[in-house]
Amino acid sequence: MKKLIIIALALVSLQAIAQEGKKEKFNKGERADKMMNLSAEDIATNQTKKMTLHLDLTESQQKQIQKINLENATKRKEMMAERKARKESGEVKKPTPEERLKMDNARLDYKIAMKAKMKNILNEEQFAKWEKWQMQRDHKGQKGNHGKKRMEKDDKKELEKQKQ
Image (tube, rainbow, N blue to C red):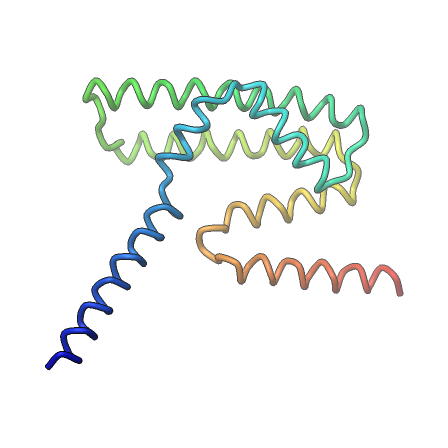
């Protein structure tokens, strides 16, 4: 009987610990709050540095991409502030199918424009790498780490083909 009670307590405590870990790991609200505390310039600089490391950008490319990232960060911060204000005022409502379609079209138009800008700034190799990176980011929630590992394997295979 004592063994059953001890086992039950152990299972309950393990379950509680596991739940805490999930909350900390996937709490998007905290991330959004941290982003709100950063300035648009800081966000743009951080993103540009990440891109420089990933794509091996030149100085002129960094300046052009910094400008684009600053515009995007400013727009995102405005949208986040607007959404927060609506949420606090209680005006939050589900978009109608027409509004959702309009938002999707706007998002896709933005992606197309961003792709065109990046194609003008980056060379062919950098652009191909950037496209893969964007696809990986788009499918991040769906694939998890398996997609990342698969992308790394594909990159290695591509490098081997280029060497031959």
